[in-house]
Length: 226
Image (cartoon, rainbow, N blue to C red; front, side, top):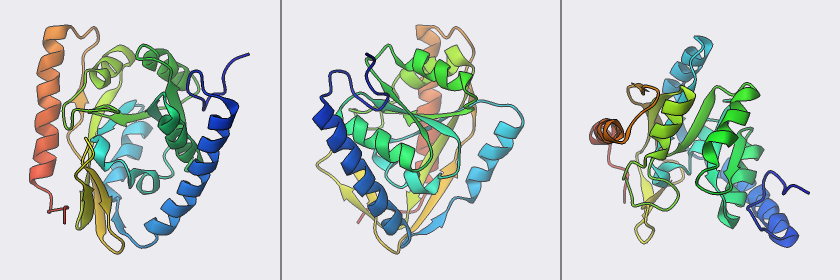
């Protein structure tokens, strides 16, 4: 029998159940927290326009900024790539509660087939953290570039700009949690077209381009940490 779609490899029925319960609780808390934010996601309209033109997009962001994205991007038919773990099962459950498809990758070689399946069901938007699920912080991993190259996605950088945020400095990703009643703005960078059959040498050049684009978005943003 195949494992449930939301289950990490080898997960027990009890751990799967616990992940679903926690995911449901966190989803409710996220919605309540989001009611206190002054959210500006107007730039996301460009995503709908690109999809309407027939483009497939891979939206990338820093792992430490994903917290507000569940609510800020709600309404988009997006496939979110999540690492296979108990924590990944919780995130996958939250994704589904906000209407996203979640691809829980079972092993590092599973991303492409899983996304190919999602594309086959009509998904035109995929999303993942540029620096992966375990860091190092703000180091562009090769996975996003390989996915874009192999599956024909345009890479679209996304930056979360918070007026006031609690920064969890002990975490590898320096997780940013916008404080209640603070303003949060989602900003899009310049799309990056990645050619098919990207070799190792070209990957490094595109990693540098992506890093510079994210740095440009950050340098033009307002201070977020307190």
